[in-house]
Image (tube, rainbow, N blue to C red; front, side, top):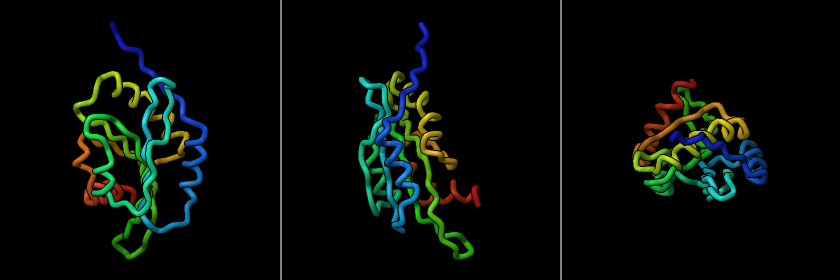
Length: 142
């Protein structure tokens, strides 16, 4: 018996929050953590964090459940410029239930599109989410 891929909708309030987040003026690192409400089959806001480092962010992610994160990161370029890229991070830890993994995987594209993001990364182990990992990933975008 094959599981059908469930694609969840994105909560309207969450879409508005993500749009506002894109144009925020603060210069600190910030994150929006999202999860799927299984009963409503909807991606919803779980938590918001201001002034949070990648290392602190990883402590906020469950080790056995997937999560979506939009992270505004203060990125210091080698030439001294500073930018604030918005990163979409899909945390899909190895010990997740298959049903959960499929719901999240099926909904990822819709959420990325709704949030209008291009820097999309995936981690399989929350311990991998470090400043070095993020800087390395962002380095490919120049």
